[in-house]
Amino acid sequence: MFALNLPDYPYKIRTIDGKRQLFDGLRHKYVALTPEEWVRQHFVNYLITIKGYPPERLVNEAQIRLNGLVRRCDTVLYDKELQPLVIVEYKAPSVAITQKVFEQVTTYNWALRVRYLIVSNGLVNYCCSVDYEAQRVDFLSDIPDYAQLM
Image (cartoon, rainbow, N blue to C red; front, side):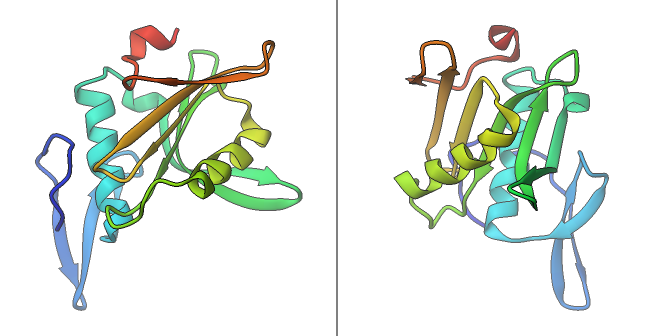
């Protein structure tokens, strides 16, 4: 599909009626193989295998209500109390990570109020921490390991 700056993993692809599908281990089903989905599956694998994120606390396509509308966050990590802790937004490798992308994930955060926001197109990754008391957002040099989030 696309070469990414993420570790490869033993993904499963199948073709049904001429359409390629990729297995999503979190949703336990095959989904349409799009460039964004390719990034999502590689990034989730990276979070689990390299950064130590527990798969049972990660949800792909997490539904939220925002201004009376149902929206979906690409991936959300929940803490031990099942409170949202991280929102991850994915873009296709051909999509530049711009201010508009950050505005999208920030809008989702109005509903969830997480401590960390991550954006990735599989080539570049950005992570920031949100300090609500100080009303400040700080960009981090790397994606934190799970143990660092607590």
